[in-house]
Image (cartoon, rainbow, N blue to C red):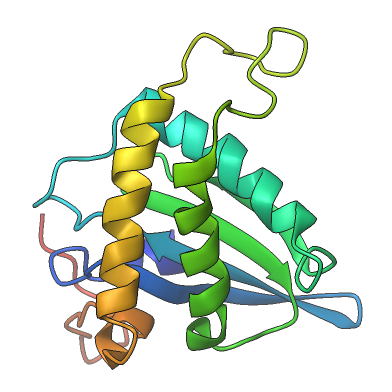
Length: 174
């Protein structure tokens, strides 16, 4: 079975940032999945589940209401490993082009007084939210994005290098 592309990213070397995870062609349109990595995997603590859930609601709402970007946004959601989010957008922009949008989105969390859609009628787990922890996590990531805006490493995935046998098979150590 082939390893999916996101598992070929070297998670021991990835840092927080905005990365192109994959580009798909659907019909005549490209759709790009971006890895918005908020914490350093396996080094920093994963995000608090309730804070991440709140960030999912707040930032999805922000992105889908941004007048310049809302028509390109397809999906915003959490990674199962709790270290970041996936942003799926129409087209195929360079990750650096999303820097300002995501910086504004994470900065907007500080002004949020109520998590949008955090009621039983709107959310499948409406009690699992923590706005205050979400604000702390968002501020930390926004400060990081701002401080590293000129650091190309926050826009380029580190790839795992795998030994390839003479007959073309990839070697994975366990």
